[in-house]
Length: 304
Ligand SMILES: NC(=O)c1ccc[n+]([C@@H]2O[C@H](COP(=O)([O-])OP(=O)(O)OC[C@H]3O[C@@H](n4cnc5c(N)ncnc54)[C@H](OP(=O)(O)O)[C@@H]3O)[C@@H](O)[C@H]2O)c1
Image 1 (spheres, rainbow, N blue to C red):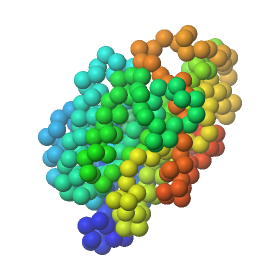
Image 2: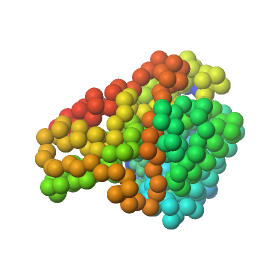
Image 3: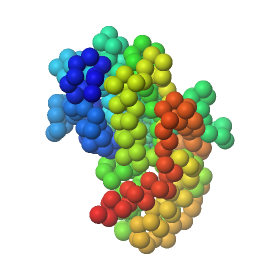
């Protein structure tokens, strides 16, 4: 495969946040298209990087000399961010701006992820990339800061806005529900927030397929770079998602739908944050599977 540096060697892919739920999937999927340098805050599978420390990022990029970067690191504790704005901003916005400047200078492509939480959910139809963000919480504000900094930096960037990410690893709704089904006879789950569950594996696979074409020179980021919604297809409430998990897992629990007003949390969340994936499908000729299909596959894998 040719890489962007023009050599015949396998491209070097710097993966930042390789220990998160999406990062862990990316480690495997990106290995199919290049040599992965798996950086994380713990440094367990590669170099250490702490996005709180700008010099750590600059050093990492200097030493790794990547042909492309995938940034899966983020401050994702949505409720905690409300009382820890500075840290969330540093990791989700300032560090992304620094990354963007370093990579723009080098002409190195980057894939980064953002969130449906950049929207308030007041629109009542699927959001497109042209809709104006209006985040309700600190996490959404800081993620918006990061995506804007990257897109305005002149870096050759793809920003994938995703939502409701779950998988076989990490802190996510699927694993929390499976645990609670075993621990409790009755569970109350919010039924008036609607979104699109996204399997971390599918997000990683779509990323690898698109990046492969970028690195081969088949896709020109000067033409197709930018912001794309990328979520599982279809939509459901948290209660509906929990019901589907319960049914497919074969576990038992009494699920009770409740309104958001009965579930007190520090961060406000959008009531309807479905993202329209049309732009991604058109640009890359790829579509994410229906969320139910991915959930079934993920649960099959968990059972194995
Ligand atoms: N999860 C969702 O539902 C969701 C929804 C929409 C968008 N997204 C976006 O999707 C992307 C991937 O999210 P995810 O679900 O995979 O998140 P995750 O599981 O929380 O992983 C994030 C990773 O970032 C690392 N990290 C945090 N602070 C860091 C720092 N100072 N320096 C270096 N690394 C640091 C974390 O390390 P530690 O675990 O050691 O702290 C973790 O490995 C993020 O951009 C996120 O905003 C996620």
